[in-house]
Image (tube, rainbow, N blue to C red):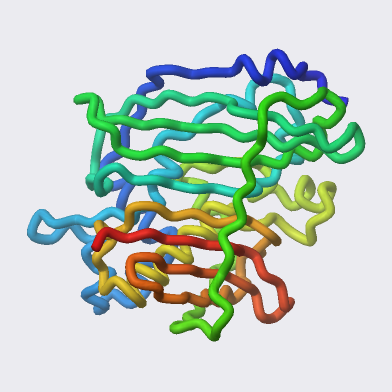
Length: 285
């Protein structure tokens, strides 16, 4: 059973938390998800090179620039956390650099049992220092070592159904063996992504790739393969994490185009494993 009580967890809020990111952070993030792999690709160059003052930002970078510590500082088994689901809603395009304020809250806890763990849903609402809303992030975490504390609220796990037809576009990319180590420099330093001994103790063959990195890979495929670099058109982006990716895996992304709604799913064909499912990217017209 967790050393953390339900009352402690449901009472967790962090309001007006300051954070900031620079153009360098934006370029590092883009490089960490493979942007600029071909330095002659004009579509991706604007995300990794500040030429002519028009540096672009990958929307999923929002996930890394205003991280909260709501469930990481209350005695829970952090090394057994897994990311279950994530949805980003953008109120305006991400600027290449900004100073931010964030409000973070635990919304709900669902206890699966002392031997199984708990689901924890959080909401982050981020605004510019000027007060303008920038983005919201809804996260669902599976905390495998903290069951037996009881439930509160209603954890929302909406499933977005994919079209029942062949995808309109399929793209694939081979991840680097050291990708998790590079990506953790953008903010996610959970030890399970870096420490082989801890990863093996939790039942994995090696350190696993961050779920938010897998989602960012899908976002990159949509930006480059569908939007011709127009990342500013993305208004929401979310998916469910269904299996792990190991750095070095080849990740395949299937994309269905339905007007301003793009559906997507990611898999690792070598293991016949769907790693990201029920994906939805909503666009401006």
